[in-house]
Image 1 (cartoon, chains in turn yellow, blue):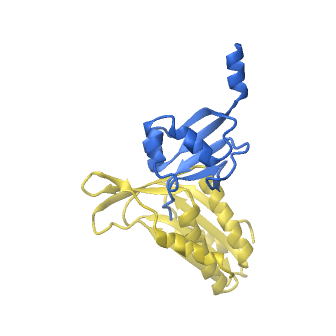
Image 2: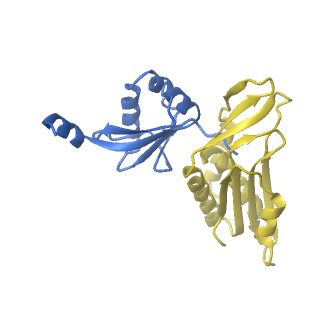
Image 3: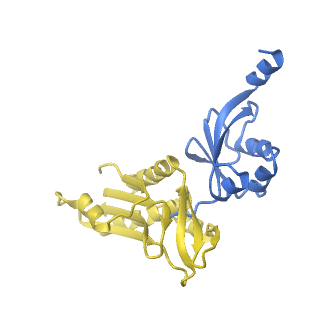
Length: 155
Length: 97
């Protein structure tokens, strides 16, 4: 596999553009699984999420997670894009693409990437509320830690 | 250079410390360059030293077990040795994705 593509950016991204970049001019890929994380409006109470990140480490840590995925599954492509800055409800936050000859490795690698991205990538979300006030920092969920631990068992 | 200054310089080393999210807000700084005692062996030792620097640090590290750390962009546990790390980061549990 060519090395995983990791991008940390303020701008939005296009799912189709990333799929095209991954699959154009090749015919060996049999499956591409994509995950797109969006900003929810939390029943109308949220105006935006502010995403803070640790420049340098964010890229490095996601690249380490991607390298683990590439070592674990027979992948033909792996993409992880994570935005920072202000993201409004309905907008995209994160994209993971995993390509393989068959569906199972692609599904599993994308799932693995997201579980570890949530618990290891240095990003922090803060709420901006619809009433104009600055909300608190989003708290980490124990569920996310549990989800990541699933992968520690033998594959 | 006075003898006292020379002694102090020999006993310290310079590191860059960066803070994120509510740890940054409580400390009141996004980053700082500090001369830390050379005999601070682990991240936990550094946290104890930082907490003695003032209320903001005390507030940031009230629950030491919650705050995460990284040495030169790699996650590290409290008992991890500082070694020759040049950039040490402190931040809350991550909430990306």
